[in-house]
Length: 157
Image 1 (cartoon, helix red, strand yellow):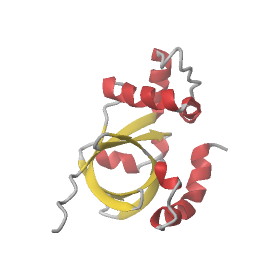
Image 2 (cartoon, helix red, strand yellow):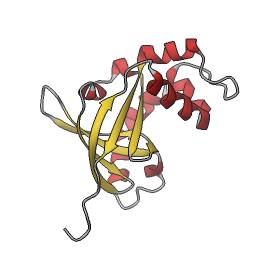
Image 3 (spheres, rainbow, N blue to C red):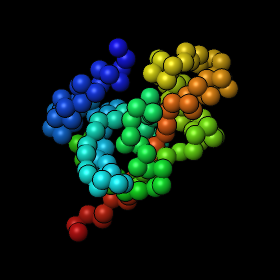
Image 4 (cartoon, helix red, strand yellow):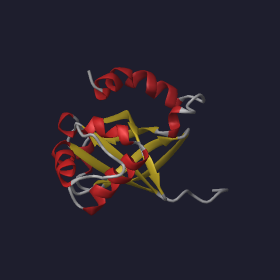
């Protein structure tokens, strides 16, 4: 049993909490992402972990071969989010696998949360950093979606 399996079963409850006024403290690391399917046009909302980087949010996708939502952003596209109790919009895109931006997303995340490496099938050591072999393993079944947030509308409009 892995973390993804557990989270899939908890998604309806997590979604309910993240939509409620009681979203804190879950909303510090989880948000709701509303995806519109490229082919189906169907909208669905899922909870995902995120990290903030300025006006961008990063979502690391473990076991990406099992998941389909992130593929909607191979080409950049609009996305709606519920972050810390607020609905915001942005543009999402997949970060090219194995490149500098891909590596930096994982390296900086694992520096803060080394145990998260297990979700990607590696044992991360902060002192050694991400090795080439580890990056290769992550690139085989991991993805990064980068979301650039739309500017907030001016107040009073």
